[in-house]
Image (cartoon, rainbow, N blue to C red; front, side):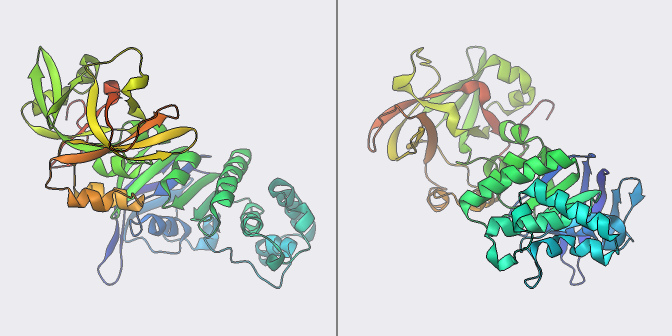
Length: 404
């Protein structure tokens, strides 16, 4: 086992297209890192450079104490699990798992011991004599993982290994991969375009866009404190609600003016983000997560000053909760960052958002408790958890934080 380091890594193809720009990452020994981002963002290219399947144009990649830029894939002591299982149909499950070991002329007894060990770990013992065509998709993916595990490499590389499975199997296999990685303690780099997969699996998540690293942090930190508008839009489902707001001084504090409504900025939040005072009189992007909105009729303590009023246009009852789409005054934040992030989440409101780019109305999604009985066309009040408001510079897209 070993750590993996990217230091100022670039990848430029022969046709001049640059896929990765100045990538620096440090993946600790035993860590599970997820690379996530839209299609074409460079995440798979970064993974393939670690594997030695793509040459590095500039910078260095190290595995443990060794710089591996010029080493062959075989010399790097890594194992890769691909999107397609790449199993040999004429071989049994046991022979597929053992294939790589036998190529390396591993002693027969060692091969048998490792195959049995991997089969027990993956729940495949009873299937060792079967052919791949006799297995389900999830079982085939376990076999592909078994083939990687038995080699006991320093690093596991996984390239969208669950994308061919149905939704239920993906959930099951996410848990299985997480369990296996924790038991083995092997450094793992996992590529996916699915932000839910990234958030539920990774110790840390690195968000990429157009070949550049946007933010690397714990899943919770990415969600609660995104570095820019792209990360804010991409991470979370439903997406963060974003609207233009003007920052004004009022009664010795700050207020965010949204259309014809206002939200007070709590003193603690202003203190934590002192750069916000530099935006007084200017417009910013204000972000509110859906769960930070609640049906005011169900809130007992009032919170009269922390409310937004709007008209319900759609409700989605999900059993344990209700998603309320509420239209209110205010200009939506429509930038390339936001649209690209939302499109990757297949946000149903993206087209509507683009159409409203020049209008003074926007739609917020509130994640209400199931007891809410709001209905379409009702005008309602939503209580806002103002302690968790997010603010972003409209020109740069960067979060407005301390000292910025």
